[in-house]
Length: 309
Figure 1 (cartoon, rainbow, N blue to C red):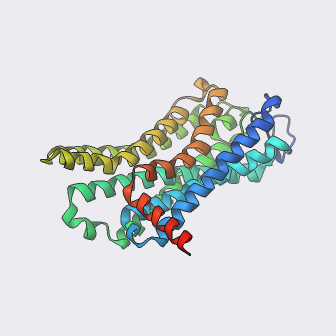
Figure 2 (figure 1 turned 90 degrees about the vertical axis):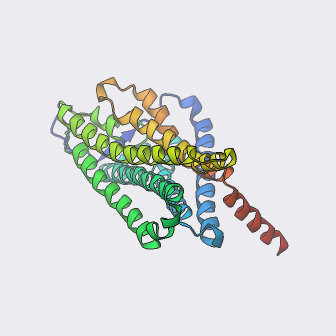
Figure 3 (figure 1 turned 30 degrees about the vertical axis):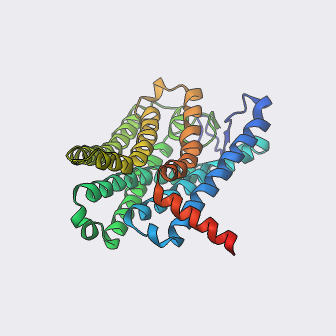
């Protein structure tokens, strides 16, 4: 990384929440609790799904992968944030590149996975007789692999686009290496880089949101054709958790990334980033379990088995 004066720096400083030193201990305790709950919730969901045979269906296979991604991308951010709150606030140049790469990769993979989950619900409700054939284990694995490949390719583009810049400072006014705070350190105009960011972020969002939107339009039409009120209630209840997760997740991403960097308030971005890097991964297991009878039944069964032993 070459700075404007020609000197080479090998690290960045993550200023994060350093402008509120009196809150460091409180923030550490809060983020530690959030991260602990996130790991326990998502790893618990993975364990529950893999050990409960009634949950060995395409929907819960995707949910298991979603929990894995949430645990991973929260882990890309939270441990370093916790360290920064109590001691070292620096990150190496290569560490910053790696953090941005893995974060972007996992975030975009989750976007594609949520689209695959919407497609799964569409097939289950609109084509129930063909569900087993259209959502076979092989096809489910292909959709997951496609989601990871899409996330990886998108991340390579964003990471390369960001680190082609020359930086005038090493002080990142954020708690992790994100695109917008790094753009703000640039010595040169970032207009072209902003265009690349918006174009490719919009492309990913368009693919994922259109897939989800079309799926839920078809699902809604199919449910409304159901004769009984109980059938409609059950149909909407089946999709409510996923629709809630999609709305929160994509709404946050659009707010942060799909407007020009000049319009960014870094303080607002930091607060929003805390929400989608730490809070959303913690909420997802709750969203998918509190309204899900199968998950609650499997959980109660596991608890009973534990106490009976």
